[in-house]
Structure formats: structure tokens, C-alpha cells
Image (cartoon, rainbow, N blue to C red; front, side, top):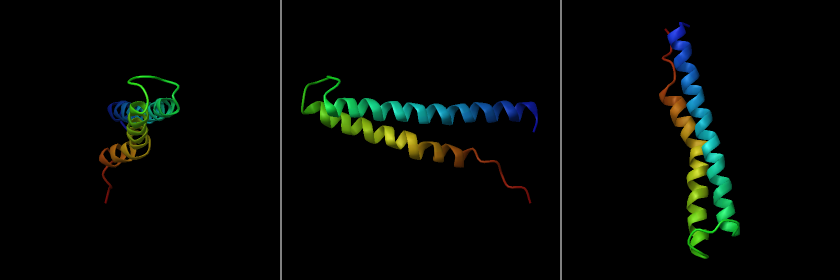
Length: 78
């Protein structure tokens, strides 16, 4: 690999890792909202906001990195 390809691969790895970290933080904040540990708009609205945040965080943690990895996959050589 050339130095330019190495730098691009490092940036993409960092982006995928950051996406997973942010997804995990969203899930934790969502569970804090659901349990009542954080207050935004008061219960029961906080529970619904927490459920939405957990779902977005789960998508960011599990699905979105796979989408990015598939999009950035190197072409197969023949």
C-alpha cells in the first residue's frame, strides 16, 4: 500500500470506530433517560425520547459501520 492509501485507511478506521463509540454513548444516554437518571422534558416524555435515542444508538453501533465498510471496501483484483 502507498502512504496515501495507508492514511485513507486510517481515517476510515477512525471514522468507523468513532461511529461505534457514539452509538454506544447514545445507547447509554437513552437508557439513562428511560430509567429517569436524566431529565429533559419530564416523564413519560423522557421515556419515549430515551427509546428513540436507544434505537438510533443501536443503529449507529451495529448497522452504520457495516454500511460504511461495504461502501469503502477495496475492489477485488482479478
